[in-house]
Image 1 (cartoon, helix red, strand yellow):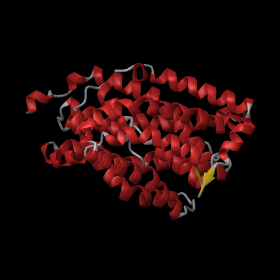
Image 2 (image 1 turned 90 degrees about the horizontal axis):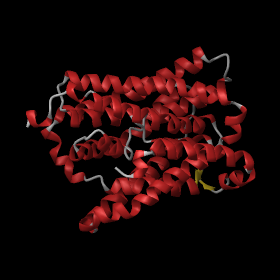
Image 3 (image 1 turned 135 degrees about the horizontal axis):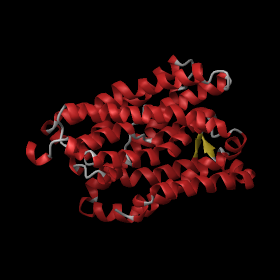
Length: 339
């Protein structure tokens, strides 16, 4: 495990602070960057997100899908949590908090945008960072590839309709063209680029990933700085909004993990399959959620802020769950006993 993974919370925390400070010291600079957009997609954010996603997509081996049948219960658990449970519980929790509990503190339009941002997080199961969480829990790397590969294929077809349905349920009008463009830009094209890289440079994949890894790290940290810079004045002016968004996100994140993890225990899955399965459902493809929120609602919207808070919440929460999963390894049968 490299220095980045070991001190991930520290680096992200420093970048959050840097973004808020820089955004308040030089709001005009961030306003200028915000104008670098085409078809509601910020070009600099798009480039940085690509830097994050592409090295991870190279590691997605679609040939591993042929091994799906070897451990179907783990994959069934992942897909059930990701596509039949998490999006709908996220929408329900968002609605409950911002339409009921916090209704008197947030105006209806802003509340709708916060809910929209939470929904975007809920409909985007983790693709990139799950490889880190899997490694930290000593997960089966090949099976993690299978889980991610199948999820990514489903995401191509399911993300837009589920998102549009849930946003429609919460009375938000969504332009399908923008949503489909975002899926193509941040899911389909990176997956295609990763597939072509594996196909034509198969023997050099590990070397390419190692060389690109620093760029991926830089992309993540720079994106965090930018996103918090864009929202800096809102954060300083309304710090309570960060707390209000974080509360339902924390409940959702821990809740989904324990639903998946305890289900895996009941299904008697080996720990090296159970832990990554729970992590994929718990973690979010926040790069996609952030990009779509910006595309649909704008850089300074409540939806974008909610997805940014998702970044803030996710890293320390996921590290705490990694520790919990490692401490409860004895709950599960070993992989050797099931082979």
